[in-house]
Length: 78
Image (cartoon, rainbow, N blue to C red; front, side, top):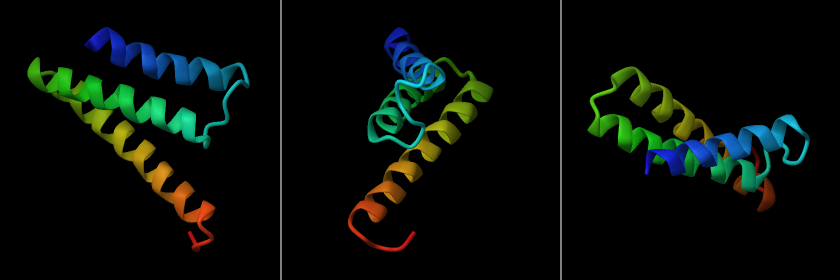
């Protein structure tokens, strides 16, 4: 599962670097949230606390971006 999480994060990152995805697009944020969630679960199981902290913050940031984007789409203020 760790390979899947890593692949999702790297696909999002590289797609952004090569201007295929904007960093505030739903697909980018979803890939980052999914990948970092998988990696957080994996790192928890492996007692990799620094890696867990990194991925929890990354996951939380991606989810916050998706929530803010949803508020923007529905016309609510940020």
